[in-house]
Amino acid sequence: MPVPPTVAVRSSVTPTPTLTPTPTLAAPRAEPAPAEPGGGRGEQAAGDVVRWAVFCCVLVPVVLVVYGTSLGGAAGAALGLLSVTAACRLLLRRSERGLRAETARGGRRR
Image (cartoon, rainbow, N blue to C red; front, top):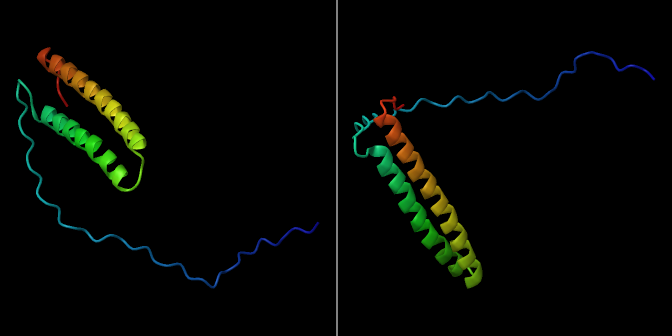
């Protein structure tokens, strides 16, 4: 069997230049709120996440029913979302307690 030649083949297609994104002006960053001993911005953010999750647990089944899903299917989706939300809330609260205990012992918070 003959060996194919190792000559580089030139293509008639020219490569397109890659576009580099133009730099955008970033909004000035707000300084983070100082950590409060009894609860800080992290706990507020965790509470906001849980509130949005509960809102979605109500909104998703309503949207499913509006778009033709059965009530049983929407109820199943609601129960699944509620169980995931409850588990995430439990984990968030547990991590907050651990962080508070760590800062109370004199550990550094990053």
